Image 1 (cartoon, rainbow, N blue to C red):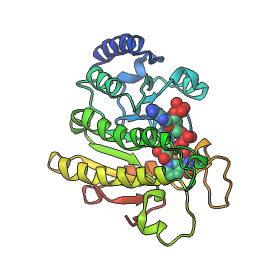
Image 2 (cartoon, helix red, strand yellow):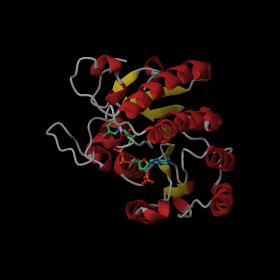
Image 3 (spheres, rainbow, N blue to C red):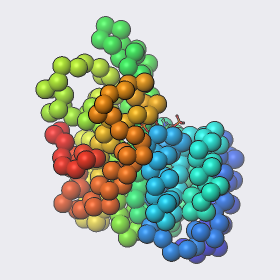
Length: 273
Ligand SMILES: NC(=O)c1ccc[n+]([C@@H]2O[C@H](COP(=O)([O-])OP(=O)(O)OC[C@H]3O[C@@H](n4cnc5c(N)ncnc54)[C@H](OP(=O)(O)O)[C@@H]3O)[C@@H](O)[C@H]2O)c1
């Protein structure tokens, strides 16, 4: 795709954002037309691990399509896009199927080397205490953590398949590992844990479905990370979002077709299902 066609695409995206109430905030500059190691699209890039991955991929020269529910509200994301011509911001709520389809349509013809399904919610640990479960939390958790990534995989399949790297990556969690949790005494986050186990199952299916097209499906646990997500938890084994993003980027960089549909730890090695 040429710089001109990217600019035209951007104009359409800005119109789409106005229509959907989402925001496309950063215009592509000349940096989009420069050679790069590839294009990466990240969901949930407003903060936490997603923001850090956007920063680090941008620093490596990737063209970064950083999506967030409300990119305009993330000062850090706005600052990143202002500082780097290779970062484009797009409004995208992964619960909103129409928004996913609209962004995929607007980016038709753009090869996406690495699509990262990062957006996720826990549903809140206080809402998932046995005996006092808040059932209204189930749908948002499953829609965000399972339906969203599957719809992203479908909608952006052609974009990924047309790229050089062909990687469709999902940020999962050891919280979704039955093999790990059966050994542990802690009980929490029923819906969240179920959602990550379901995400894993869905993506094993996708890996099989897309194998003959050469698309690699990554399922990566990012470690225990000090972000808003951790609800103030502070344990010695926790790592920063910067460390987690760097580790995940390393795993993603080395992903092979043999690893497609397997569950990988940020620090290397596999996670039991
Ligand atoms: N932190 C950990 O210890 C840990 C461990 C294992 C796995 N993970 C996984 O890592 C991923 C990132 O987590 P994090 O720690 O970076 O959490 P975080 O700091 O809470 O960030 C979550 C991100 O997801 C976005 N998001 C939530 N719902 C969304 C939706 N419907 N559409 C689009 N974006 C949405 C948030 O956007 P807004 O700003 O709009 O809310 C935010 O950018 C999640 O999938 C999480 O399950 C985290």
